[in-house]
Image 1 (cartoon, rainbow, N blue to C red):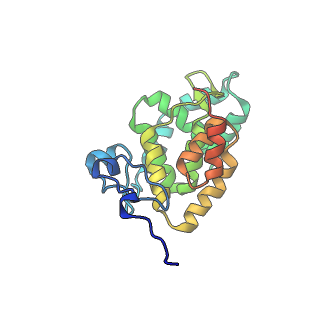
Image 2 (image 1 turned 180 degrees about the vertical axis):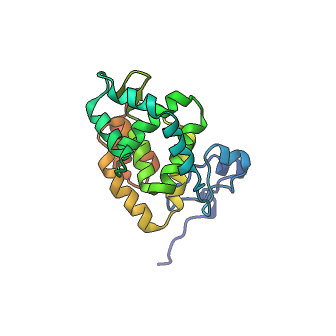
Image 3 (image 1 turned 90 degrees about the vertical axis):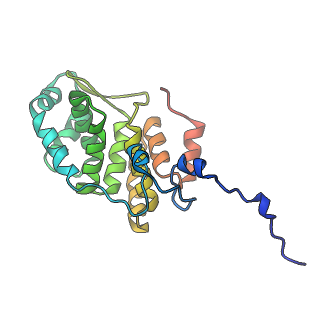
Length: 219
């Protein structure tokens, strides 16, 4: 019996406009080469790297608001577990939850769209891609104000540019780095909102995606 090959018309070929809307997935089709406007939306190319200076900018933003950060961490209404994570991160610990807590406070104080992206690139440059992915997952479940720091039961809107950028970098990074990110992210899926972010960042884990579809987060 001759081998059967499907006809060519059954092969999906994405048009250029559709390729531009494609969010990269490891092992999937390559999106179109991003232009300047595409990069502003978080799109990346396989050869892209992050600005190493972002770590210094993020550190300066944290230092700029150190007094306000301390006031939030010392507030009686702030969640003690999150406060402990934040203080550990400020002391140099490898703590994505603490990093997310500090970024949440500074983002509120700066109130600018570029702040989350600065912290995200800073985390990648100073702590690695896996750390940044975990911090973004944690950020989805943290709320802060001038008076407190607390966990969220519902999904917090995480900066879409940062998410898309990290997803793209994970799609194109070396296999060992990707494996390390997936292993670390497994420990940051404790709530529905975190599971949703993790599944967006590493969609190759089909079991995690299925879990999100079966039990989506509330908004």
